[in-house]
Length: 253
Image 1: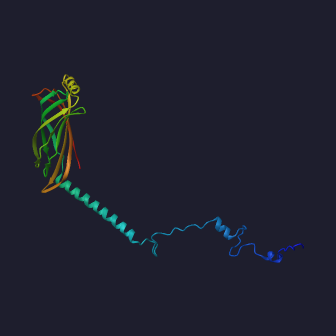
Image 2 (image 1 turned 90 degrees about the horizontal axis):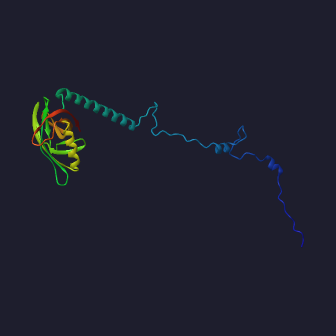
Image 3 (image 1 turned 180 degrees about the vertical axis):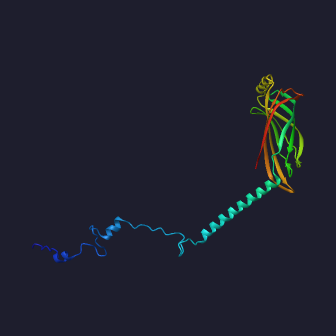
């Protein structure tokens, strides 16, 4: 077989020498890198486009900004009006908290049951004083009065529903009853305390009331209070002497 002739491509040396070393569409920088390479090394930085473009004067003229400013102005105006109204009401009516005191305390029953629970029955006379000249107080249904020894509730009763007028003093007779577990331990503690002649009791009040300003009946609030008492004995069917009494009360919306 005849030797096959090998065909080699002819290279145009002049064309290679004249071909540009930089691709078409790119430019050479002073450091020897092309602009295309610089774009690859340094990606395009994103420009922050304002959500609400300013107007010719450079100020935001969007309706959203105007709405925010208008809303804030209305809220500030409402707060000022409310403060003025509250100040006028306070100056005109001069509200004061009602005062309460325990006049007498009587134990009708104090005994141990067969299940060793302690049964108690107290009769408490409370004085409610409304010192306000132009404010009446509605005592609503659901008021409670309770007597505690340390952290144990001995008995509880309901406060009556009534209206107390201006500068009025009302005396309330409230019957309290209760049954406490672990009565044997509690009875021993009360008897030991009775030997000292000073028995600490805590009388707590929780009364829902409504305030009356002139002819206007306002929303309900609650009166929370307690009277820290020190009595001489817990003898049944006898009037107990109250040696010390310290009462404090507060309003809660």
